[in-house]
Image 1 (cartoon, one colour):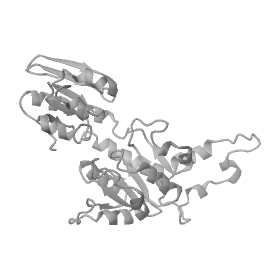
Image 2 (spheres, helix red, strand yellow):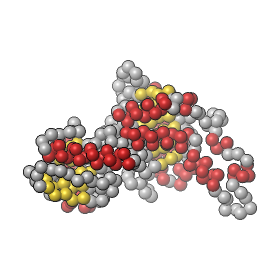
Image 3 (cartoon, helix red, strand yellow):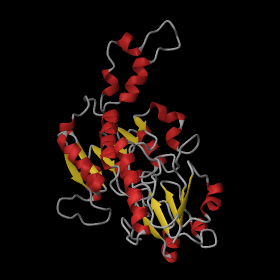
Image 4 (spheres, helix red, strand yellow):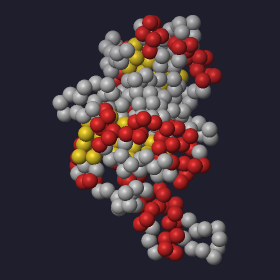
Amino acid sequence: MAHHIVAIEAVHCPIPSFNLPSPHTIDIYNWTYESELADRVKDATIIITTTIKLPAHVLDPKVTPKLRLIAIMASGTDCFDKAVAKARGITVCNCPGTNVDSVSEHVIGLYFTTRRKVVHLHNISATVPEDSTRDTEWKTKGSLRGHLRMPDGKAPLLCSDETMGIIGYGALGKRIEVLARALGMKVLVAERRGVAPRAGRVSFEDALRTSTVLVLCAPRSPETMNLISTEELRMMSPLAVLINVARGGIVDEQALLDALVQGEIYGAALDVFLNEPIGRGDSPLLCPEANSLNLVLSPHMAWYAEKTLQNLQDSVKHVVERWCDGETVNQLEF
């Protein structure tokens, strides 16, 4: 069978060349807006996407009658309508484990940046007031240590003082655990909410109450949407740092803003957001009030590393070529 491959989102990573047993064609688009999607994929037998969603109306057989394979060039699995794909028998495969090293290292970077208030300290130490008669706050006061004090008035915790709670214990969670323990942290692995903890794990609620660093690396699903919201944030220690490198929507962004304003937690760092890419009006975390908070935002770049790019190309090439040859690898069950 001759295949027509349509890659709708090459902005993140180059699309590899495919060695297929039958003649094939390929269209590669750097980015595809929702208004362009149906027309671009109408003749596709294979669609390659990363974060751009394939909703029910696009997966309708009237729109994509030839579609047989969706290859997600990422580890995430939430960018397509599962019910329609299942009803049509469309195979969906992803590229698991390709970004584990880069994302886990980004977590550690976000931890230090937030615990040590690096962005805040940069801003106040490098800013000269508009009133030209005054100098920087560091120059006039001699020390900025007050900005680093914890809510209890004490100096910041060291890694050996931290307890990291991990929510989501797949390959990424396991790698984060290794790095955290190497830094001297105690690590707690949280059980899924509402499930009695297995050996070696603690309950979801205990992880919230006990952790001074809480890392989210669970997949987004109906069960994890707004998993961390007002009630959960109030359970957490006022010394706690929250880090989300999973998916947007797992943290209720308005609830997080409110918790930071009210001092319910010490700080937060997010690499993912409910609406991406975020711009003016897309997230409460971009409001002017957030500028004074211990809040670090990175634009969904935790995955980005040269090794990750090569892993993604190798993985999606393997997925497509093997499937065209009659063997399915990395297939999602849904």
